[in-house]
Length: 374
Image (cartoon, rainbow, N blue to C red; front, side, top):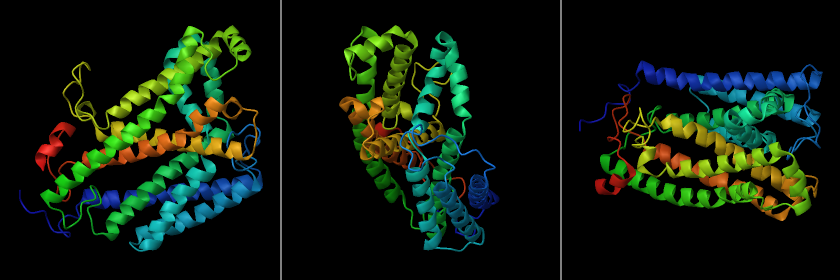
């Protein structure tokens, strides 16, 4: 393999565009956060749901004085970090600020309704045919101020995590596209892939164990077995066919998610399997796995955090905190989400092929052949 180009030669127009796009995205999000905070304080932007309706929310509503002030602070800090990145400065300050903004958005503003919305979005194409009113309910829930603010700050979690990674690459003089540094060697690449596969397998195993807990509470409903609820309560739900159908649908979605997680460490996570007509044998785009897995990981962590908040408040009005099995199942989503996040990161690192920008890297291989490379 030819030697990788020098740092100066590797600054192609593509890399320059990638390096400037991320700070501009961060600047746009920060400006929107400033506007949102001002809108909340001025009463221009609707405040959203009350504390009783927002499961796991840390503030009385998304538009409370405290949340508006925090949104303003995050916007100001974000603008400073983005400008410093555009001026190629900031160093460790920008790195710390980016991770702080991402973590604050996740812990403070993103709550359990994100996972609920994603779950209903997954089952809507199927269950919606049998429950026509579900589509209208989903649309109405999507455009509430509470959920829109949650989606906005979810975007902030992702944007600032990407900013932190890109800025770290710049500080290390690494490639802005693939993250490989000037000391890269084929041997280092092989070792990284082996470690990423090993870590990914452990993380996927942990995630799958916790992922099966929720379906085990919902799928028995098909056979009339009331798991996690009292018999009288289940009889009331069974009288409403839609409630049981939605519960089973969400349980099935959780089971499908557990199966898909296996793809992060299996051959069919790199090449489409034979039973997928039309695309079998083709390369699985990295983003096709990483983007949805990252979003689900964020939603799971937010749900787990929300359950913990509700338990600390000692509120038992919700089924999620009133029943022990449901409490354990939903609180454990914090571990499930964290494990899925680790598995997704390991998958992304392992899937890095030769970089067209810096020239570093090795051809992509399926998991079963990684150890043979060492």
